[in-house]
Image 1: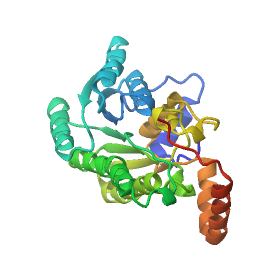
Image 2: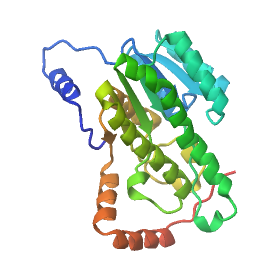
Image 3: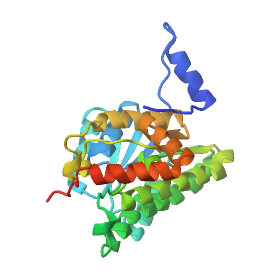
Image 4: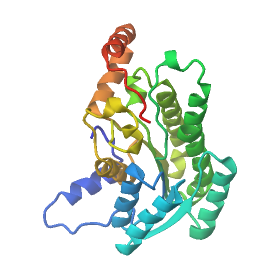
Length: 289
């Protein structure tokens, strides 16, 4: 799963949990309000279910109201606590209204998972007249989570506790060709979280960037180039996200992502040449439909 850079408290809790005979301690998510975006399917739905199993109070946010209701019904029927908040996160007024409604209903938010997103795989040679690809991707992958974070951050700082998990991508380290719009938007969120984490650290509000590799979801299935590639299940990805919520590391990286980042720093031109060769040799891949 990569490095977790645990806080001392999380490290101690993990070590104690491994000692035979000691009573298990409840999850830090128990009885805490956890907002999960993109909760109608994929990683978001699996994360909402996993948080509920740990006793968290799930605030499930997504655009597709019918699918979102199914996830919430599944949680409630299993004895968990969850509430659906349908919202188009690219609508600024709707996001502001969402923040107000959630705070009115729950008084506070302890955790925020910025998971909702949009991916696109298209070379720049096919993007010269498609600036809208960049605008749409930035709107959901960067502006929306920043707006949500800014909405809940004052309350987190006032109560002197909060944690934000951003589901980004290993691409922010590897910088793979054909993903300029997607990786650029996720990189912006990655950097925002690192700076926000430094400003809010003294108030015990922390941020984690989970830099996931490929996950088999509706979003990835839209591109045929991914069909034969190894990928995590949404449930596997959700376990990583939940552990990031509980342990509050700075980043969660993959080995490939870490190697790619080091390669880019130590030999930038060689890494450019390598990526260019891989790009030329690789299958073109097309969006389905």
